[in-house]
Amino acid sequence: MQADRLFELLDSLVTAGQAALLASLQIADAVLEALKLIGSLESSAESALVERLPQLLSLRTIMSNSTLLEDVIAMAVQATLPVGVDGCPSSVSSFSANIEDVIQRSETRWSRRLRSTKIDLDLHTFLTQKTISHSTVKIISGLIYQRSYSSTVLSDWLRSSQCQALDAEYLLPILHALLDSSDTTVLALPIDIWLPFVAACVKVLASASSKGPEVRNHACFCLAGILSLHAHGNEELLVSFSQEVQSVPEKKVTLDLISCGIVISSKLGSKSNNAISHLLDKGIQRCIDNSTLDQETSDTTTLADTLRQYIYLLHFDHRLMVASDILLQRAPVAKAHLVETLLTVTIQHRLWSISALRLAITCLASCQLKVRLASL
Image 1 (tube, rainbow, N blue to C red):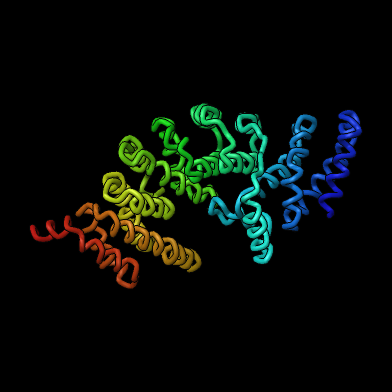
Image 2 (cartoon, helix red, strand yellow):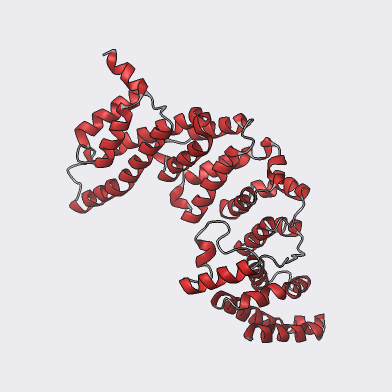
């Protein structure tokens, strides 16, 4: 009921005319702020937001620069989709941390799925607006999931300089929605459109410290999805991925990049071995480098520094070795000289590490290493 009364107040402001509304922008902003708060706290308010979406859209001509209005429109658009449709935790945690509320919203949205909700929004307007916010991204993603767009508009935008220059935290959720929507439009797009985004995804995964976990999750999903397109003709995409991986310094090979390699290998199988081999080589080299870090200490190293170093090794190094082990099992393409070096540093510095020993055992099972050992 509170949401309905707030919309009635907006109605009265609009009915009074554009001049009256412009003079009462503070009141309109207060109403929108209240709607935003209610929508995040009360699942029942979502139905009112969806029903009143046309009214919210009509305000855009008057309040074109209102971030609050865009936030509320984004909430209304997202309310037309199943909870967590993109698989990202933030799409659930953004409105509640209460499991009961999440379940109630899920049931309400699912029961409403059979009732067609026509969203009369121009995707091109949001894609090309000068300032893009997280709410803009939610609106665009919602329209893509609803398939309320023209393939030509989307294709032109993907090729545009504005799209190429967009920051990853805004670009990748849009690509995620596009690849996840299972629309034939995606398959109809030429391969060359996707090439710049391969580089963008690898860049995010190789600089994990500068991006949040959600952005990295989007990057992994998008990279695996892009490489899975055109299953019988994606060599150009795989070559691009291989080149990007080769350009990543060993010190910047991250757990996220190795983990994404596991996903790609699972999706493409042996077809991706050539591209994955470069990633695996760098992953093993990173494990080798990490295994000797504790030997590079000076007389001036303090106990606190030593403890911090070992904490780093116990957490990051362990997970990196586990991921490299899994990747090697899926794509056994490690080079013999790297495996030999890894075995050496494991014996010298990592016999206490279960993850290091498991990685060494997996390396020993590689055919390339057996041939090399037989010749010694």
